[in-house]
Length: 300
Ligand code: FE
Ligand code: FE
Ligand code: ZN
Image (cartoon, rainbow, N blue to C red; front, side, top):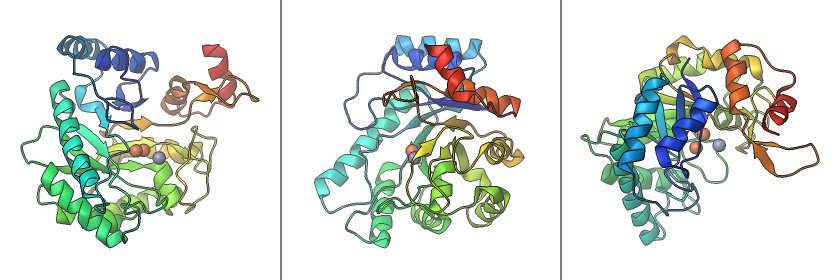
């Protein structure tokens, strides 16, 4: 199973990310090249990058299974403020070259929110922008994430995703499924194989390059997008377990983006990463009834 979580990038860049992923028993991971909410970025260190790649080799982590996530502030769907839209395009291009400097093959992108525009207008803007951004020769592929349909998010149905892919001239584009987003958008994850059949008919499962594995705090079709720890939400452990073991997605990295755990029940601050324990449950195929207590115990 190719599985990991999102990890930090702010300490020794890719080297720190690799060390963190190893501490969770992961053989894949996802990074933001800086804070996801802003565009402040430091130069990529060649030394940290080559040390990271060496450490990955020693720990059976393939660089193909390292994913980048573009920052949320990139919004290709809304062109009302043309400067902001142009900035999103140039920033995404820079993120792609930063990935290439590190040898990262995939960058996950939220298609965007149309805000006051219609979904159709939003999708047209996304297509236009991606046609500026994506180059057949890029060594890092943009992969569009399936969205929950919160607010004016585009990319919440297979049809919307398909329209975007059809509009983009290059084939150098893929898809990232997010189980929480799918649930919240109205896909019943108990029938995930039916969804994959449909996906295969409309788009082709070979286009799926990453799966975000999250439980959801909300029921089917809630359009909320609030992630929950594995097995503690509305999707449930057994359903998520089947998804991570689906043979059609065998070679696709599974990335956890579940919430950190607070130090105690009456503490609001989320302090401890759940990933080591969630990865362990999914690898063993058995739900841990003491998940939260075990995490608190381990990190305290
Ligand atoms: Fe995302
Ligand atoms: Fe996600
Ligand atoms: Zn989400």
